[in-house]
Length: 151
Ligand SMILES: [Zn+2]
Image 1 (cartoon, helix red, strand yellow):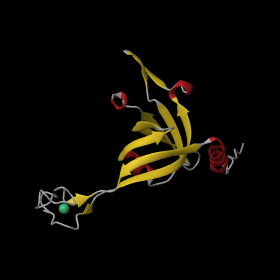
Image 2: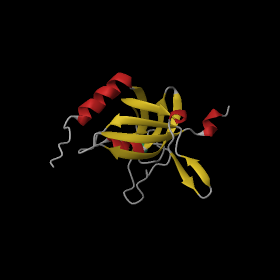
Image 3: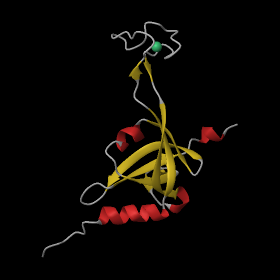
């Protein structure tokens, strides 16, 4: 028996996301460029001038970047993902977002400062690559930090 797998699964999944998805923001910091103002100590990677006004003595400058992406969003009360452990059930995140896969995403996600989903600040905990036969989407588990709620 020859099993033929549909070849347009990614297209179907993408069009579903385009219909029911909404935009989220990924806030991350660009990998540092060598500071243009001061001189970097190649041994320590830091600036020779600890009071440099451009980099603050770090020796490199970073730029905050906001990436807007269309995502399928599921909040925790809609999902049942949890681990059963001898110590009890552990919930694995407050929110799950699914994005179209891009090879640059894993690095951006891993180095992300925070996510903004429905105006809620969330932090990356883990991700999973999905898709048959080719990877076509990335599932990201996000968690709220209760300390953000403190005033
Ligand atoms: Zn500098």
